[in-house]
Structure formats: structure tokens, C-alpha cells
Length: 448
Image 1 (cartoon, rainbow, N blue to C red):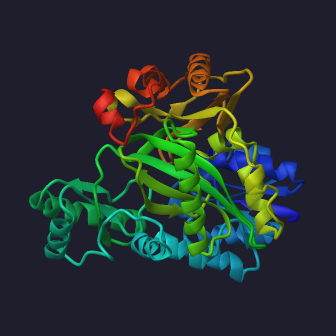
Image 2 (cartoon, rainbow, N blue to C red; image 1 turned 90 degrees about the vertical axis):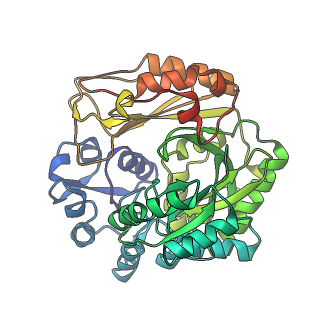
């Protein structure tokens, strides 16, 4: 096992990784920007190194500074968390060159699965169903229209190197497609440094279902069941739950088998997520693979009792999985609400500021992952998520009631948060019946 590990991230995921390291008796190194000098993850680590000014490119995305911090502190491994550099092949490659273990898959796998069109081709060849779409990146507007006419409208423009909903546009006709092309390319270029796009058939009233997998270097691989991540605003997830409402045991088995087939086709090692679209008829299609830990991993941990972050570290250290497929049980129901420092009535506009009051919910079946507290300054430089509240109970209705009670008992003042909006979602009759899809927010909830 590693003696010392550097966490190349901030906020709640950094704190989550630090906790896993404590349980594994691993010394920890936090990194921080000048804006995060007093942040919780800095206080929780054994050592901390400043890596630059507040803007992400100058600090948390600065590979040279991160590697230098690892070298000078003697860290043997780096955990990238999610976001930032977690899916940047060059970072994994440099870690390997510097003899520092990267907690995640190889640079080659990150690159292949990060190229969405290449990932689609890999899965199609392995027999995993994929959404009908272009065979590769589209060349120009004329090429896009020809492909769209073959697929049939509506179609979805997606960034080849996409993630986080950036570069996505839905076109209902040729004129819209041409109109959206330039803006989607510009957004993809700004976000990923690659303006290539591909086309997929848009599936209406679809649900976003993902399956968590774990794989070690000894050939062992398991799936940890599915999560429903359909509650999204502009492709940004707000609430996740496991298991997915209305998914039968038969469908769950087929989703798990498809996820394992996909992971094997990618020669995958470590924790990853296979994402699917599920249509109204119960047919599912691969859309992408996330080669990192997910924001929503806690609902799966609550359901299975398996510590995904701890497994990540153990796998990277060369150890075997601590779980077997036949001994994984999916117990009860878990829900996660992402609490953002944002104003839902103004289109989820960020609401930076000083947290003046911070009171967390307590009780059985309640978990809060956060990297802030009373007196924390929420900066406009970083993601607006300030906490994740997760509840578990023996069934979905009980888990919803527990979440409602948890959020009502949570106190955050000094800035606006999405807690009132999350409570409205939980109280929505369609949500309570499990009638959710990717258009839930637009169709069932009023937003500014």
C-alpha cells in the first residue's frame, strides 16, 4: 500500500479522498490555490502545498505545479478526484513517467474513452448497443445535414471530447442544425481544446442510467448496479438515486452485463461508469464512459456498502478487489441532492459569498459530503456545489421522506442555495411516482 498520497483536487471530493486515505493509514498531501488557503481539505490533510493563484488554469489544472508538489513531498500516488485533470490523458501519462501512481485507468484508456466517437466504435464492435449516430466526427454543415437526414430529426450535436453537458445542442431540422453548429464547436473548443463534433439520434423522453464498475489488475471485475441521473438542468445533474425507479431485476441484470462487456472492451482498470440512455420501451444504448469516480458515487456506496474511493486506491496499489459479484447486495434505496450555491429562480446563477451559518442534518441514514463550513468563502472561481446530501432507507418513499427532513433541517445562510428547489423536486407528484426523464425540469418544474 502507498505510504503517501497527494489529492489533486479541492472541495468535497478532496475531503472524501482524504478520509479514505486515513482509513488505509496513508499520509496525505493537499494542494490549494491562494483562494483556498483556509479551505477544509487543506486543514484535513497531513501536509499542504500552494500550487498557484485562484484561476483553475494557474492552480488545479497546472500539471507542472501538481507534479512538483508530489515530488517535493515524496507522494507515491496522486488521486485526481473528478473534474479538473481526472480525465486528461497527459496528466496520467506524466504521472507514470515520474513513477507516481495515478489513481485511475491508464492514459491510453482515458484517451480512447474520452474520444466519444472512438468510444462508440469500441462499444459497437463489442456488441454493446449504441445510440444511432455518425461513424466519426462530422466534417462540415453539409456532412451534418446528410447524416441527420439519414438518422431522422431530432438529432443531437455532441462534442467528441465532451463532458459536463458542454457542446451539446438538439436540432429539430436542418436550419437549426446549421445554426447550432458554430456555437457548439466554439463551446467545445473553449472547454476541451477540440472543436470536433459528432451526431446522435435524439431519443425523446429518455432516462439517463449509469452503471458503476470496478476492475483490478488481476482480471477481477464487478458492477455495483445502476443509478438514475435523469434530473438535470442544462445537462447538469441535480439529483441522483439508486436503484433506478421502475428498473426490473431482468433489466438490471442486462444493464450490468452490458456495462461489464463495455469495460472489458476498453481494457479497463479501476473505478469507472458506463452511461446509458434508456427509452420508454426499456431499450438502452451506450452513450459514454466516465473514466473516474463520479460525483454521485455515494448513492451506490449507501446501497452496496462498498467504499468506491477506497477500492480505487487499493486497485492502484495492485491489490485485488475486496468484493465478488455474487456477494454484492443492493439493499434499500438511496438519493443524493447536490446542494449548489446558486439561485434556481434565476437559471441557477452562481451565488458566491460567505457562509454565515452552516448546520448539517443529523440522524440514521443521512450522509453529507462537503468541503466547506461556517465562515467558508464560496468563490466564483470554482464549481458552485457546496455539499452533497445523501439519504438511505429501506424503500424509495422512505428515502424521499428522509431527504425532505434532512434538507428542511439544514441551515445555510449568507448566500442562496438550491435547497428550496430540491425540496420542490422531492415534493413533485411526477417525481414521487418515479416518472422522470431528461426533460423533467423543463416539463415538470418552473425555472427562471
